[in-house]
Length: 603
Image 1 (cartoon, rainbow, N blue to C red):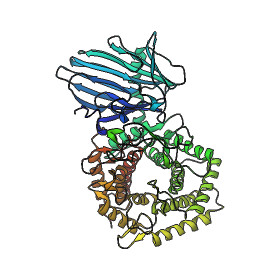
Image 2 (cartoon, rainbow, N blue to C red):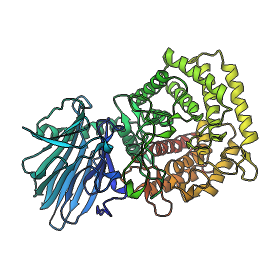
Image 3 (cartoon, one colour):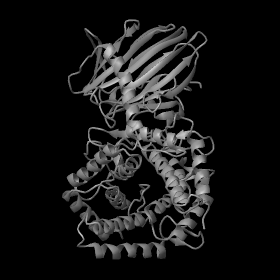
């Protein structure tokens, strides 16, 4: 694979992700770390070359001569290995955000080991902090242990073994040179913290922690309960989701990056570094399915605690520490491949999305059905949410796609149906107060009848996006997961989505989107579920295999979207919703096979 840049930029499928449970760094195939937010995933970026290819911050370890690169993660690990081959030699770069003996370190430790394999390879090493989105300018000071950088409250130390030669040292950047030889082993690292004193450990300890960190990832992955033909793929997605889990609180970021475009040169460029209620709910189910009960409990506790803390109305998303996500603002940056605007914060935070009620109650019901129990405060909160849903389901909202046009979106009504249905189930299990269960049943049935009367198109033979339109919505594929009662109409809707929105295995979000954006990765995997849960296992397997073929170009990491024509990855990465959809798709096939091993098609 070539790691060469075009106009200073790489395709998104040339980027990998490493992390430590608090922050995620995005590593290019040329050895340049082009995105890293310090100290947290939703902090202002320390390196931001992804959005500013010429002036943005980066930490690069790149061969001076032309090279080819082979990339992979260490087995069952989020430690990345890139092997560079030049005309003069071969060398290996191993990257990780380190953890300690007892887990997450109280500082960020970005370690990069450079090993000579054959001949000689000359590397140019550059550490250039960004400007923290215009919040400050970096400056350097000397210390007994090397260079210390300061900018906007972040303190960062650049550490390197003695064979790394300093070439340039000033406030804006550090440039070094290294020539590898067979058997050589060198290390460069950045240690960072925000508004805190910084530990400067020996280089040998940093190097050792790189191996320990990989072993920790591998131990976590070994304890997952995953089998079947897609086990290795599901395990890699579970590792990607673990990267996005913010361990200090239990929240899950929707993605690690910001403003990567849904169409090159387009304006749909959003900040996804926050915790969407929907994504956290789907993550809890995924972690329960793969046996990661500690992460599932942490995420559920964060979700309930955050909702209780802020009360009503529900926000669509929150910061990873549980605060309300920031209001959206536009930044003066070039953007990835000229795609502007670059945004900070997200305007969807204050939208009404009625489907959120269903996401929360579905999660609570699954938590109980998995053999766990709810505390009294959570039971009370869930009962209040079901009551609120019963009162609000007839309102218009922004829908799952966070649109500016409020409508009676069909998927939102089905989400309310799910909330009321799961509220009834929890009441029957005495996990929430049964006082209003009779009302919840009646409202649930009213929603079902309303959807059938108002959201079905005889012409399309499908549920439509909302009453009064013939547009189709691939989100309705999720209704099969939630068990909406009309299986015949769900199967017909699935077939209509395939006919109108699918391009091979790839699926657009809703009618008309082929003119504005790429296909939505999660939708392709939701189609797998819609086949499997409605009994068409042969089609489910074909759809799953087709999606994996189209998504399998980047070490198992998924973006939000894929261009149906070029196959290019689009949108933020790693994208939680895409990985969640993959996990649930694989499990839906396995569970359907257990129910009916010989099933092959509808009927």
